[in-house]
Amino acid sequence: MRLGISRTRTGRRAGAGVALPLLLLLAAAPALGATVKSISLKDAGKGTQIVVEADAPINYHDFTLESPDRIVIDCPGAALSFTERVWAGREGSNVKSVRATEMGWGKETGARIVLDLAQAASYGVSQVGNNIVVAIETSAPAIETPSRASTASASTSGDTPDGRRMSLDVQGAEIQTVLRSLSEFSGKNIVASREVKGVVTLRLRNVPWRHALDILLRAQGLGMIDQGQTIVVSNLETLRKEEMERRTAERSQEELLPLLTRIVPVSYANADEMAKSVEKTLTKRGHIEVDKRSNSLLLTDIDERLDMAESMIRSLDTKTPQVEIVARLVDVDVSSTRSLGIEWGAKNLDLFDAGVGEDITINARGVSNPAATMKIGTVKSFGSIEATLEALETQNKANIISNPRITTVNNREASVVVGQQIPLIVQDFAGNAVTQLTTIGIKLSVTPHINVGNKITMDVHPEVSDLASQATVQGGIIINTTMADTRVMVNDGETAVIGGLIRSNESVTKRGVPVLMDLPIIGALFRSNSTTKAKRELLIFVTPKILNDQSASN
Image 1 (cartoon, rainbow, N blue to C red):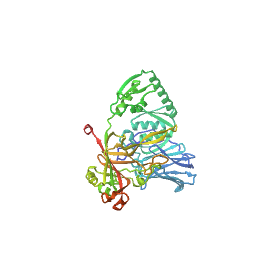
Image 2 (image 1 turned 90 degrees about the horizontal axis):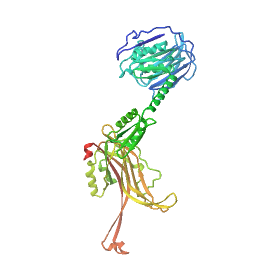
Image 3 (image 1 turned 120 degrees about the horizontal axis):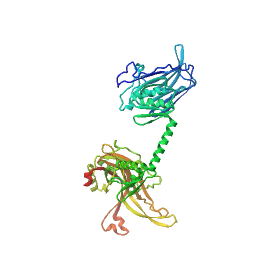
Image 4 (image 1 turned 180 degrees about the vertical axis):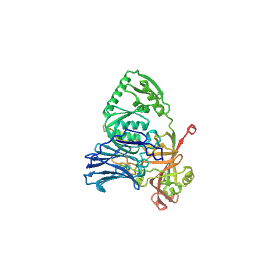
């Protein structure tokens, strides 16, 4: 047996001697003339596992190369039984490719397996039966270079004791001996059951000691239970049975404990909504009731579970920030929109394509091609363009339709409707004609999400509907509807603009001689009519503002 473990502090090379004096035993040499049958790659936790399958134990040694980063595993005396010798790495892994070839070292021939890495990383090599298992971390500090490979090193840098790194090289060692070495290195009490037997061959380079323990247990079909300072190692089936017995005993004990009732008031959240989350912490005997009048929860269960449920309620019942949504609906002449200084397609917006349903009817009086013209922009503040809008309004080039304000809590939808209700005659399930009121006009739904740095993401859903010029189809009414869904990110107090809702308006102007132009028959000789066509654009300005306690009280 050969076993070596040593440790150093970060950035310092380990000494030539090992830190833990261990019993050295002579190991049986692996059989020569082994054949590599296959090489496979698979995900393994936070890294990638490469399994080299052979028909007999392989005599191997590994080392690393740089520029580019590679792990090389030489297998003297081994042969390859397959023709395909290049494998692509798995998506998202640190292994770019795996290459296998047969080569010679003087008079000796064998197989060489090369793992091409995206970046240098810690790795471990273990021999499990006839197979060689290589575990490579996804991202980690640089692996040991050839100049340091002869020195078994372990780093104590790590943010936590569990992150301390080590190198481990054992051949034919008793697994109990390796576990004692890991216990001494980690400072943890590792207790192994009588079922933990056998010898193990491991070669690990600069890996966290917990990772080394995982590889060791996985290779031997063992498992562990971490109890803090003590780690219990045993057969997987034994651990499963013990865990089931422990849970059964806990449930039996819980059934003997008395049930208690506790009233927990909810200050900020909705008690009815919170009950669904808290219910999962109760036992089968426990139950929860909601008192809507006082917005409180009535919990019934054993004392321990009541403490857990109350702790969860206190954690979830926090004050939710409020957001004031100020919306301005402005009808503007298309030729005048450039003077407003709107920054269309601003970089700080997370844009989604606006869409229109397939059942929408659009004609000359409706919105023209909204899917193509829908656009999103921002202005620093509505006050910067307010004077311009007032000037346009005096020239009949702009019309402020509505200026609603609504306050909602974070992550809750706020809705604004500007329009009118019209009666529609529809049929019920029995085929009877009934009158149903339908709202047409402008509907705006905004759901704010407060982000870090007082940035606000808004899910905005505008919907514009109007009566078609041809008002009847088989006695019904045609309604033109345009809608879109978009997500906009703005700063606190910044204004988002939704535009592109174009309408075509026609106006007829009569000119002529007073009195004479109104005479029948001959009046046409004294008057003239002129038709003016103009395109109008509906702009929706949305300004979110985070309310603090002082602003909310005002």
